[in-house]
Image (tube, rainbow, N blue to C red; front, top):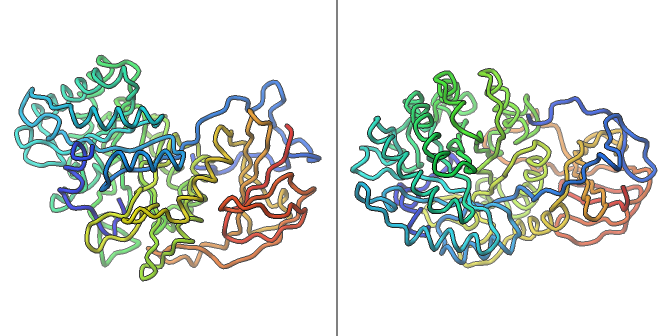
Length: 465
């Protein structure tokens, strides 16, 4: 969750049953589109990107009636929903399971065609002294039994992704309400993975164990904000991997917020940079796993430098970059504004149930890019100018090529902990006009070979392979 304000222990840890390589190079320059020359590696009609894939878009559902939240998620058209289940609610006494609330929540998600990613957190007092961990050997064994029981119950129904604690790299027990507090005990977290993984696979061989979403930012020795250090331990991931933990999860997982963009920009643009860094860290220990991002968000509060327009623009940019970075899921935090006093407003929906512009922008993204395959980033040669970021997708079911583009500005002067929506305009010169041109909100614009592009993304669609 965003570092600026955090959920209370009750709102996070009891939320569960209560409402139960970035791209860094290697792409050939050139063009792909009607009248555009081939580029090396362009797929042929027989071997091209013909397998449609579900959009990796997801949303976290916290602090809202679950059925209302799931219905809103379905209206957006997301693939994933991140849901919290509290161990203390599922197993209040050793071996005494209470599944009723989880049954209702997960059944409702599956009935709506949503893919649950379940975060298990909230250690009951009988299993350990801290609600966010760490656990001793007996507690780890009890946790493994719980996960196996949950996988046996829900795996046949279609629940296949299980995440172990939220932000386990938190090292401050005073912030235990973050959902994880393993930061000072990474070897114990590696031991938990080692104990839980075979139990999960025995219960459901098709299940996926997801490493707890790492904040991997706002460190205890944070160089971006040295006068306000955070709770997260910088070397947590390295120590988990050094202890052999990389062999005992299926999917790596991180969180990303754009106020930390300066840290990751040397590794790639925005979320792509952090994803690239994570992959390189894994590779240094001989680990190669799929990666997803289970928290990303942007706030609308003007006193914090945000706005509804920035949130909507960034939501599209973040999801497109996440697709280009080959992330299995990119999950927005949060569906609705939280009720915690002083919390910035990250919701796609207000507390009154009013959708913000980002809600509509993500609906349009889903309509334009669902089942599309990422092909490559666009180059200045493709667009006839510098200062425009763009990505090429192909929708095999419709035979449509889609370019998503927006104007950018250098980030060298980007201040920490502030959004970045430059007021820039660029002129893009295309070899020929697109068949369709839509703005961020799905409104058509007159197609032309010369376009004025601002920070808001545009969709350029061409017919034919």
